[in-house]
Length: 171
Image 1 (tube, rainbow, N blue to C red):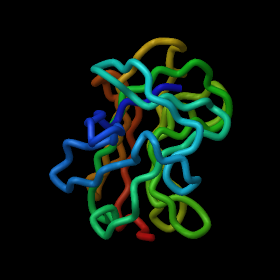
Image 2: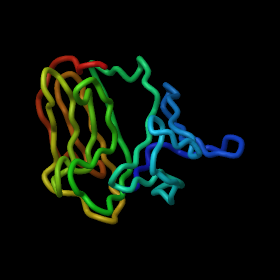
Image 3: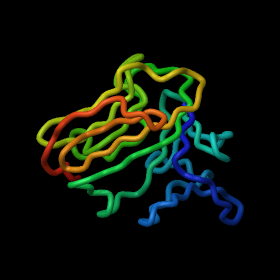
Image 4: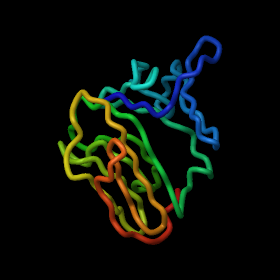
């Protein structure tokens, strides 16, 4: 699965994944391969420029933890994805906590299931789409939480929503 969340930026002789977020939380160096930073992910052609490509087995990339990632009353997560398969839980983005997730966006929340966004508010709560993503096609996924509703979008269309109130668990 290719996920385009960060845009590459040349930094000396390596490529660093950077974000346009005002919080400026940059991702991994393409040359870093330590397990806590990046493993088995490679740079590939993306929807808009270059993207990280994940092998669907054990590839990952991480952004160092920061207090600004402890979202409690609202969140928006988005990414362009190009899934080759939708086997199992296809994680696009996740903020982990001890024992599980704080919030996450999945291209598939189990084999060939629709995309879904999750928040942890007492338990894992989700807003899932109604159909699986197409394979080998770019799709834009977005998930929002505004302290009243969870919403999941595919290509700008609302595909799942749920009324939920409370603070997202922090980690």
